[in-house]
Amino acid sequence: AWGSTLPESWGAFDVVLAADVVYPTKDPTCLIALRDTILALCPLGSSTTLLLAYKFRTEWDLDFLKKEILPHFVVVEEELVEPALNGAGRRCQLFTCRRQGSPSGSDADSRMAPAST
Image (cartoon, rainbow, N blue to C red; front, side, top):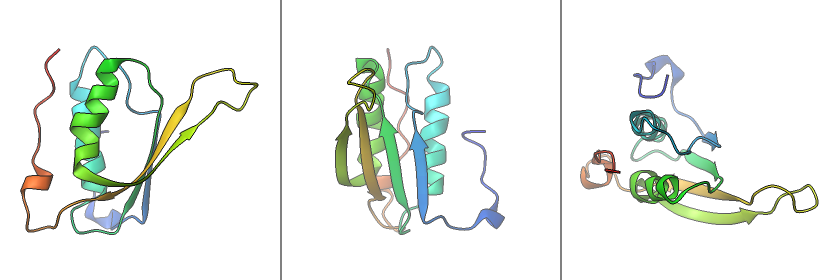
């Protein structure tokens, strides 16, 4: 579950893929748990790449992405992906990210409180 401690036996990851995981919810604690899990899977000082696919739904979930997840990363590439089916559906943003900061710096890894609504 998001927010749970990760088993050490999993080791390090080369790539973490997160698709369609940031969305509006009445319980923002699940998104805080998602953020904490992403940060644990992409630790400071690692070479882990985060591929994050995001589909805009509301200003709230976009705000969460911009304030709670992306500030912990350097966005190496951002691509806007158009719908494949004759333009039907919504566009998706694909972020290719690397964790910013170093293991010794605590400012990039600070945990933020959930944004008030």
